[in-house]
Length: 480
Ligand SMILES: Cc1ncc(COP(=O)(O)O)c(C=O)c1O
Figure (cartoon, rainbow, N blue to C red):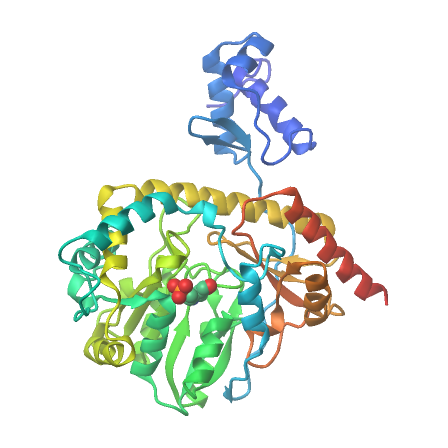
């Protein structure tokens, strides 16, 4: 419809523009509740329907979000004009991994109540339905068939595997329940997958930067790694991967196609398909860590690499640690054609995974509250991440670059080249703040001017103050 310039804009659009200007000028700040529909209708002498239409328009434009039973809130938005972190170059040759003691320190500080925990990617316990889980755990432990006095001879509680299989099918991926093995977290799944596909001395291709836990595991298994540059938006660079595959004897690729930790990249579907074809061309397996796949901010769960798997070469790993209950340590692996090998390895490493813990989660999923919980935790992560990003931009030195994840809850920050984040980590720790310095995410100690921030904790003034302190410390380094 062509609008007539002489026709006044509808009332709801006028109201939407007024509220939008207040947000853009900063009078209404992210996280603030806007006046209730009723109050706004009274104030502006318009109908309730007009206000609802105005607020819905602003919701569609991304300015407001509706929270059930609570009202409309100003939405924090990731600053789109901030430059993103840069991609590094391909490593010349594979190398053994040296791991820093810093990782253990960061993990141990994650639960230290005297610290602001911006280091470990550890969500705040308040985000999880722990009371309900505790109740289910109690009844699972009392159940007749799962007595605590018996060995677990099968690693997988079938009702849980069936529930997982059903959820995958809903998301467009076919994984039958008997192709799934339950593990102790995603960590064990990755460990088993690496052991099933490689032997000591072999080389694995990994993204760079990558999750430092992978580096620990790779080191502990006596493997070598080659870092493949990874774009902050769409993930692993496939040209570089192809070059590396042509030049080196690589036995497996280990990657996170969705909401990569630490840079938040997500591979589009077409790129996942292309990667799969490349794996087929070189007859290689890939280990997919999809831990953050359910934590999307968009409407739909992104597909996993496993969705494209025609011949069982994808070992798909995940867990409930970031979405439901890190403390229960329930993860899983769909190892494709490596199923029997992984089953044997699981048996020799831990015999099985505790059934009471699996039943607890299975009952939670069966009771039907999981999707509701996921919707609320995704909203919380997105909100926290956006507020953290805005705070970084307020407080960090000019020239700071920032990732723009579309899911998960970690931010990757690239500071001006002169800033040393290992030093920054020590200085921040003295102020009772933890961060994850960039060199932790590389086998070569790259990313000395980068850091990862955990945004899995509810936003508060102390977090803003901690980010301000980190910004001031970085500024001080630049000034000397
Ligand atoms: C990418 C990635 N994989 C695996 C893990 C560990 O998962 P889990 O706690 O299920 O062992 C983490 C934890 O931070 C992670 O970020």
